[in-house]
Structure formats: structure tokens, C-alpha cells
Image 1: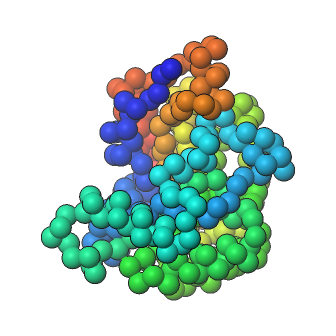
Image 2: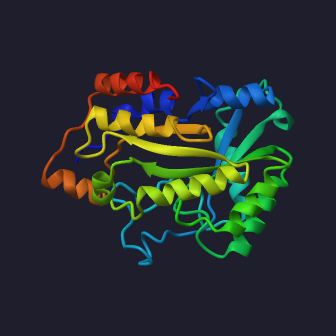
Length: 281
């Protein structure tokens, strides 16, 4: 079974690529410029599932998604205090000792599954509580565009007045043929509606794009990036994710049955370079 672990190093370079004005800067630099120091992500869990898993839309999720809902680094089965302590311990082990503990800053990142799908009262309380920690300077919420109520968007907009909040949407591609293949479970107009409602509320939006989905050409990827840079208002962030084939996923079964093209490292570098050349139309 082939797993694209080879691309972990380049993913660290690409992951969190943000579009600001007419230039791209990476997320680390954006946060450092804003907060005066390097800011680290704490991977946390809301305990939510996904409508693409529980039968509301489909079962099994997107074909590339692991049993951890693409958030395998987050601790599960812990309350919020325990999760934060656990995540800080993991992250702090990588932070230079010269940076005092009381000067370290973090983004609370709810990544796994769909983090606005569930008991909204509970989720709103969780998001508010996490921002009460003085060392957490912002909140990043991974979710689906079809799981954002007006009430949730309004609540997040209020939180955003005190600390930075952004919403990460897993679009992956604008091409409907690929969207059906990966079992995304919603059409492009659903994304467009959510994007408008989020930005109208003053919230930043980050869109995930997967490079190397089965059947997509380099030009297909560039079309997706061009579409995103043409959004109004201007998109805050594009997160370029390199395709990983994880054991136990439907994508892995598909690849084992009929292998499809997987980019070599130099090919990934080339397509990332082409993405970086795209500018707002």
C-alpha cells in the first residue's frame, strides 16, 4: 500500500498558504506579523461527526478521509481543559526554550470532522470558552459549507470582534465530476452561498484545495485556484493540501484496485509553483 509520506516536508512548506492583497504569504508569517511572535496551532476536537458519515447526506465520508476525520492529531475523549493541556505539551516540546511560557501564543484549531454540525448551544459555549484562555489569540474552525446556520455565523462574528476567528471550508475542487468522485456531498453553489454569508458577517474564510485528486489535470487544479482568487470579497486564505492515500480509506481501496497517477515530488513542486503564479483577476 502506497502512502504519500514522501510529501510531508513539502507540505510543511505549502500548508497554510494565504492570499493577502496581491501577494501570497504563508500562515506562519501572517501570524508573526500580526502578533509579534510565532503563533502555534493547538489541534482540538469538538466531538462532532459529519453529515457525510452519519447518513444525513451519505455514509463513510469523503473517500480520502481517515477514521479520525482528517484530524488525527487532536486528542479525543478529553474535556476542553485536558485537550488544551495535552496539545500545549505536544506543541511546547517543539518551541525553543528561550521563549518564556507566558509569552507563547496559540491558535485553537478544530479540524476533525465538521465542527459546526451538532448541538449549537454546546458548540457556541465551547468556542467561547476556548477564546477565554489568554494565551489563545484566535480560533480556526474546520467545517462544511452546508453546515453553517445563520445563528452560528452571527455568533462567530461576535466572537471575531474580540479575537480573530476564521472558518476553514473543505472545497477541494470546483469540478463537479471530481466532487462526486470524492463523495464531497454538496455542489459549488452551496459553497458560494456559505462564502457570501460568512464574508458578509466579517469573517475570514480559508478554503482547502487538494492537489492530485484522481482524474484531475494540472490545468484543473489551476482552474480551481483561479476561481478562488476571483472571489468577491477577496478570499483570506487558500490551503494547498497534497493528496495523501491513507490506509483504510475508500481512496486506498480505489488505488489498490486501479492505481491512478500520483505526483512525484518534483511534479508537486511544479504545480505548487503554478498555483503561486495565479493572481487576483
